Image (cartoon, rainbow, N blue to C red; front, side, top):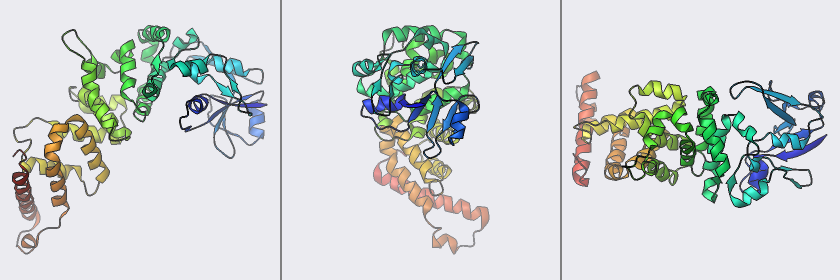
Length: 381
């Protein structure tokens, strides 16, 4: 039995990037031998096991043969006879097909080291086209590595265009699309995820509403750059994937007729849905959008005292989307938060008002307080 460090851990180590998780390939072993050595099964469908002490994944060397439609239509073969080389050749990109032995020696049969040096995201064989998930993965790797000059190789881009037009692409489940997209929001340049998928035609089929916002016509300079500018701004301010997601998807969700259904279909998580709902509520065009009463009601809805993280996420996202507006309104919003947190003034407590009448009077008192601040700061009123 031989064990090799493989995949992203080798790639990131060679790039001097933090290694977040390590994956291992085991050559020359059977599932029974792994279980006898106290490894635990990590997956019922694949020969992947968890180390008894570190919980890191150890997978038996395997090959995959395309047998049917869709990204699940593969027959997996594994066993002691499968070599490391055969396991590496089944992988997606050359930079993900390197291994290290126990002595730290690099095994690179696909030219991954050279592609790392040249900043190329390149497929290994034309079998790359057999799995549409690889479109999402290469877009995510672009989001991770473009900061250091990585780009998709021309020949790989040609295959991606072919894959984008295939029926296999639509076999991708929303959960898998969301998983890869959500992971890209934690990368240094998440906008590259959308740009790469848009350039090969996959985004137009998988996320047509987002693609429409990015479409460039001969009458527009660079709509892609305009749409992604808020995301680029917010990336400088926070690494919170929820905020980045909200800013990236806002332009698209704002224009769909059934926004709740759209978020359902995307499989957006609870925090992301809440932020998008807050941004949509704030952006609704009304005659009194900047009136003290309207802003105060909005702040109350955000529940800044009970849900401070929700409020902070809104502020960062709103600043990314509407920096000029927020620069004017931020003092007002912050004051509204402080007013909402204050105790009921003694004058109202000592009055004979109760129930709804007291609540109405308290709200009117808060509005008056906020109006004073808006007059003093010159905020629109």
